[in-house]
Structure formats: C-alpha cells, structure tokens
Length: 162
Image 1 (cartoon, rainbow, N blue to C red):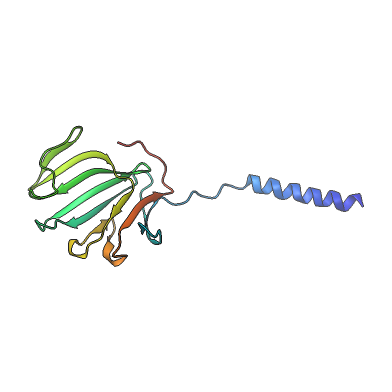
Image 2 (cartoon, rainbow, N blue to C red):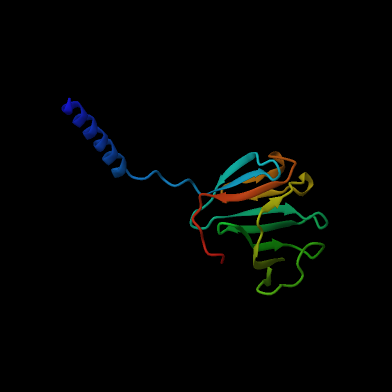
C-alpha cells in the first residue's frame, strides 16, 4: 500500500514544482476604466501607455464655442497636467496660479499645472461634444451615458506626480 501513496505524493510534488516553475501571468493591462459615477456600471475600457498613462478630454466651451483640451495623467490617481484653449472667457484661466505656467500657444493658450482631480468625473453634455482623445481614436462620451462618468486608471504602474 505504500507504493500508491508514494506515487500520489510524488505526482503532487511534481505538479507543485511545475506550477512554481511556470512564468507568472502577465499583469493586467494599463487602461482607463469609464464607469457611471453613482451606479458604478462599467461603460468602457481604453488602453493607456503604461510608461505614460494619460489621456486628453476635449470639449467645446459653452460660451466661446472653441475647443478646450485637458490632459490628465494617472499617477495612479488622476492629475490635470495641461489645458489648451483659445480665447478668454468664463471658466478659462486668465493668469497662472502658484506653480503653474500660462503661455501663448499659437493663437491660443497653454496652461501647465499639476492639480489632483480625484475622482475624475465628467458630465458628457451633448452640446459640448465632450470626448476622450487618444493617439488612435476619439470617443464621444455622450454615446456612453447621459449621466456623470468617472474615469480611473487600472493596471498601470505607479508613477511620480510630475
């Protein structure tokens, strides 16, 4: 009776060794997860560059009708790091705050900053054409939900804030 027990123990040891010797499963992909802010239902996942996990949110200014583009970096919490816009008007910066830089950018402006925005929640009003701009595509947020959308990074390596 000792032989079958030894065989079972040997097989179990062999399986354990094989499991330990196998390469680890790859980490989950670095991606932006969009979900309903209050309900939590997942709406979409978008790939992010793990070396520089960031995305741009563009929208039309409600008064001026010009495009505003905000760039967010995930460290892993979201931070607003740049805003580009044309003109001057309600809701747009007219001076740089402490630690910020406001400079001309062609006919428009570029504000460089480092502001925590956690959670990152947007309300995709159709009239403002709020959209996420990635290197290879744009996603119109109003097509996902009329409710507030939370955007968070998942599976991205932590990065310093700046």
